[in-house]
Length: 264
Image 1 (cartoon, rainbow, N blue to C red):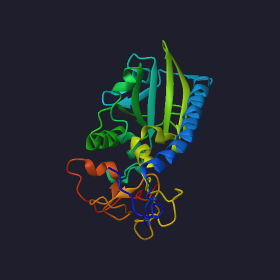
Image 2: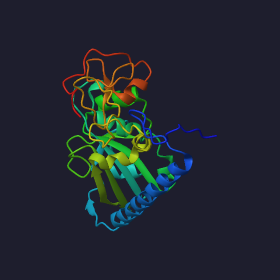
Image 3: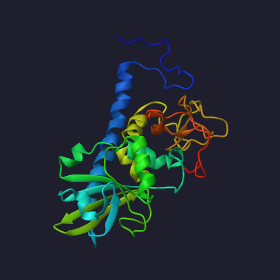
């Protein structure tokens, strides 16, 4: 049973206006028209991606993993397609000082079983030295393959913070697509779910109604990746770290973020 106030147009402060179910359904249906158009445009963009040209490069170049140097071709694991996340790295920084955005993105890519089912392999590449990377991977509990691409040129090495796709034809390897910035949001289901909620992501740039909550620390500037303290509060304080890192066993408060603690 749905109950409504005497005056259904009365808006509660910091909350959507309260209406009856029929009024809500009409507004919902109106928005659905726009959502369907958005979906169709996304399909058209995906079709255009499939028609991009590609770039061949030497698939025998070696990357370093838990078993030492291996040719890049090995990352395909015998499959024809490969998606990689190119994870930024700050040399010498403690675990909690590694990139917030990369930590968040990699955390949402812990299981590639549905990619594998469509003939696509997955790996994480980073410019960090392997001994540092191996320690971080163990701390975070990642089970997907990680490799160091230190000293290598693009498209395998070079700039990090990208989702990149490759195609294999026998022993020939091709770069087909790459994206960064908000293009990386595609793998982060949490952001998509937050976009469905009344209060959204809690990011500074979001278009919100007047009076919506702004419960961020004084002086804080919320962005699409942020650190939290042990209690889950968003903060840039000395005991904060990227959110996924607090879920690790033994992830106790820390005394320093290292020299790279304030990268967004």
